Length: 427
Image 1 (tube, one colour):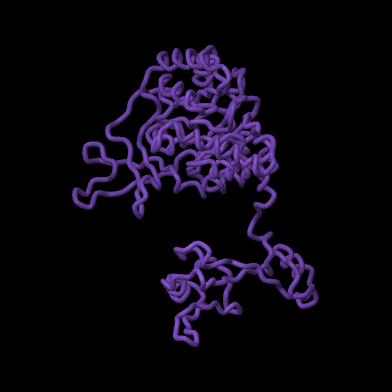
Image 2: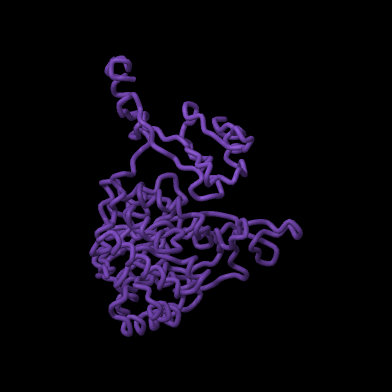
């Protein structure tokens, strides 16, 4: 069995699976149940003021018979008193000393407020703090959450204030509701953050009831924007994690969040630079015991790869994540249809004919049996046919050689900028 334990900014955890700050970590009862199920750590539901919430709070996006593809909430920070939470954090940490407990915090952007709450939480024995600069609703209207997280100067300043008094590592949780997340990530680094976590939820409206015309969810027939999470946001989160991981100015560890639902998702996040992975929606959808499959799957994966420690996979894909201008313009793949597997549903032909490059022909053989064939010279390797194909193995995307040498857009521009003719360099 591989070593699944991690060290992120000095915070130890028996495995990389943490429950993210949210409804699943709202009490000592819940966090202790999670640790018994196997979770390596938990980020306690955000502490702060005011203590209030609304009813109702949650909504979900279901699609094509799959439930909870996306999840939306308008819930704020904990609605339990700070004293109650601090007592339960203390008791939970005492009972589970080897598990990571991180206190998520949100207060007004004032130095005294941050000093006060850090000093009050320190005595509970938490392993670190996560500054919530990401929540997009409710608290943001009061200058907290993403309202602070969208201003690099405020991120830097508030991080610095916490570091003035914190004796434990400080993780800065970033909002995705910003043009370029590396701006605020670099601000966190300048403020002295020990780690960053991402992503928090994305501004959203889950839906509208077309019979009542109410928003979903609604509170007394009025609705508001909320935070979007769940499997649907994973590609956005992976991009942002990768963008920060490959930036040399952001040289601190990352805790990845956003649509992690199984061990494969966790491996993807770790390969893109996450040391720990935080899970919320999947825990709410399926319960705490899903972590058993995550642990077993990750362990089997590492064993199959001959890797002794999960820390050894962190960031392995980052060097392969580049800007578009660094991609080889002369690399090419084409679609190959396996007619022994194809069921002749023609979805690939329709997709290609209507919305792509019209390079799949509908033909008949000598016996009059219909089949599909790709005209390789016209195929651009867009992948659409293989994406819409309902049968595994019916369409493969195959690499084909090029008569030209590898060349990126940036190389091409550099050459043209020097006045050389492209024909002189094989293009």
